[in-house]
Image 1: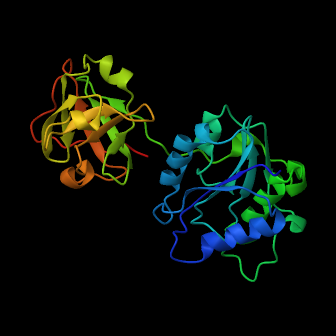
Image 2 (image 1 turned 135 degrees about the vertical axis):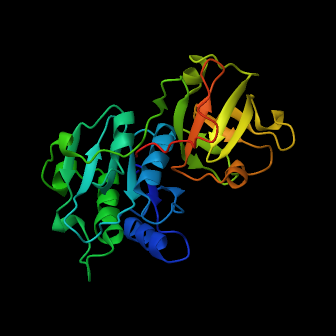
Length: 285
């Protein structure tokens, strides 16, 4: 049986793009199992795609081929790569999309630039590399075509790094954080682990001051969404082990005007609050 292919893109489901890519793969490997991670990323959102891969890779089958297509530079001289790691092989554009997940799996073993004419479709134009280059390459790799057959070796050190911000600690001990992800329920995942809050005096059941834009609110650290009182902003550790801002059965993102990339300042009990009215800083991505 072929190795499974996990497929992520910003194609959406209104157009035929996803179905055509799947058709190409299945025409090469009819028994192929395809896992749809998501196709509803915001158009051209390389950073969001990279974070989705980071959240997902540890739960994919051993040996999976991961096809990731968020490619604002399609048709240019940007490289299309196949990156072999210990437990998965990634295919996608070299624009920062792959690098964070590759690092999470311990780094790459081998990297090639996908240039083989034998393992692609004849393209009527250069703007659908997902269909013409990446989907065929993924199917061939899934059927155990050697990685080196796809093209020449590339130095792994030359991969474009991912643009994922880390929290900054202010002189007062507060954390300038960033919203990494807003799920469909409006929960806002931050780039902060619970250990970072605990190291600054916060603890479950206690309060942490949250500054989002010009709003200042005390949030209680709870265990589950249902622990929140009506309209109460809470902090909790989400299913990926990161701190999230949430409301019970309501969208924290909508209520507080947050989106991926928004700056949020967390002021634990042991930190000094910023000056009144000081907005949360947005971390550079």
